[in-house]
Length: 197
Picture (cartoon, one colour):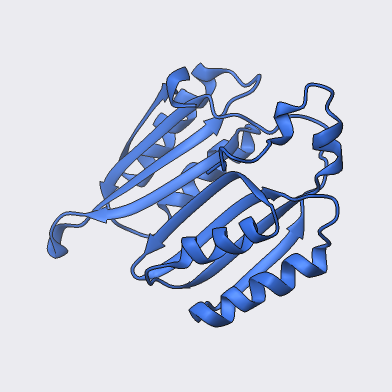
């Protein structure tokens, strides 16, 4: 989503540019309709903002998007909020939130593996699998679920991207096998291809 006509913070090899450009997390939710992404990105472009990372989803007619944006140092938090409030009102969104991105003192967790879960739909699948991961300090970096199949035989599908870090892959696989038996689902884990990162 980078505007090729504008300089990018990482284009400055001295690093001074990226220090002068504060980052914000922008979140918007509402009923889906055409033009939401265009409206939000247009408002950011007017403020000379650059969208660094983004994720958008539509679930049963409900839209949600999160963007990480950097802006020139001259643009204040309040100015960004006011401009995005106008977009919210124009598009009838339920909410738009703007929060400064704090420096966490280290690189963000990068996904290393993908876990796939399949089985008959029933409550507790997400909790069972993610609890096993949390107990082993495995960081969930992305999660998507959906129902597939006919109404009388719904198949629950969950795809989780995780960052194993220093955790033993075999330990996680063994734990997932146990939870698969208890939850009566099929679970598999594979390394995430570098090309997909």
